[in-house]
Amino acid sequence: MTVGNLRNAQLKINLQAIYANIHHAKERLDPGTELFQVVKADGYGHGAVQVARVAEKAGATGFCVAILDEALQLRQAGITEPILVLGITDPEFASLAASEKVSLTVGSTDWLKRAAKLLEDSHFTGHLNVHLALDTGMGRIGFQTPDELKNALGILEANDDSLLFEGIFTHFATADSPDDTYFKLQYQNFQNFMAVVDQRPRYVHVANSATSLWHKVCGGNMIRFGISAYGLNPSGREITDLPYQLQPALSFTTEIDFAKLVKKGHSIGYGATYTTDSDQWIGTVPVGYADGVPRAMQGFSVLVDGQPCPIVGRVCMDQFMIRLPHQYPYGTMVTIIGKSGDAEITADDVADYLHTISYEVICGFSSRIRRKYL
Ligand code: PLP
Image (cartoon, rainbow, N blue to C red; front, side, top):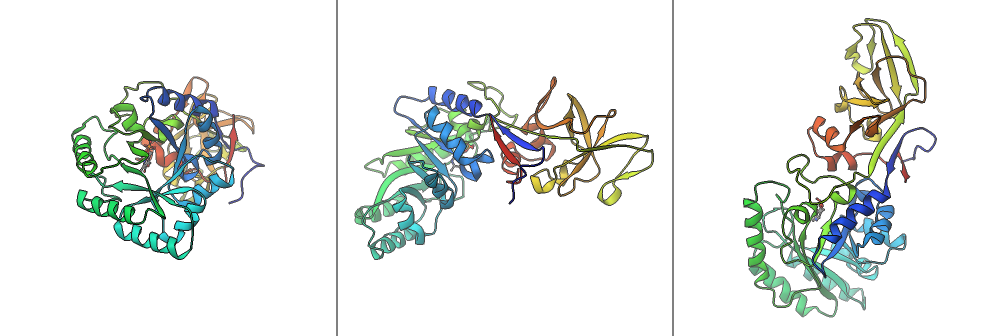
């Protein structure tokens, strides 16, 4: 998508905040425990390469992405640290991943057999690094029983000329919940799996942000740190007790690019869903649902000069309208996420309004919005 460089609408990304969040997370880790920064979905919308570079400086020793293309983007940008693809990659791409030194996640013995055969057929001489995913209760991907895992370890051993057992991991479904009953059950399952592993691989990893914040890292030597590097609480507002202050890295500002006094009784926007009940100043803002401001934001208040101004009428593809307390000149700043005067809108405020989580809000901003790095 074309980037809007010539309009006043930007996501400002504070790289210092990302640095500080990662630095604090690292400080709490046991010696020898590494931090891999999760930069999938373009670094949760913050820019994968820019986040990876600052994360390296803050002490990240590797990266996690969701898909192979994201790993290759980091390699093309000159990032040489280990990269793990967390999703399932088609074994067809095993030799491409291996040649780029990208580690792949594996959750079935069929995948291992197929990848080993394809690597052999391709006459690739190096190794493909694999991390075995264990489904301890997330129900998404991974080996489901210790017996399945044992079979996988056997296949790895039989194909040690092409496959390298580099890591083993699981993912907790409820690490961000105050009730740790299910977390404990998953941890017990993880221990049952690990009992069949004679030789631990280089990386054993179980912790996402929430696990690293609120649970003792369960015997792993690497954490997969995602949302909290971006300064957001993984639980939303459920757990407010944080071991260090998280600094949100992203703000979203734009401007009033048109404003007019609308007489009482006029309607605003598609569907004419809002009608002025008095003479009102209505401002127009040059972003819309194609930028990641969904139609469901109708009624949400953005900030102008520290004051909340509700979105009136439907959000359009590229613009929305707000009710102003009085006339403001064109070019007045509008804050959608961030501070304005004494007021602030957080990604969690937007998430609450949309009945979702901050993850979805920050990943939802489209590539049309210019990212500006501070
Ligand atoms: N590990 C895995 C397997 C994930 O899927 C994710 C994110 O969804 C993470 C780690 C990072 O999680 P968080 O952003 O909550 O730290």
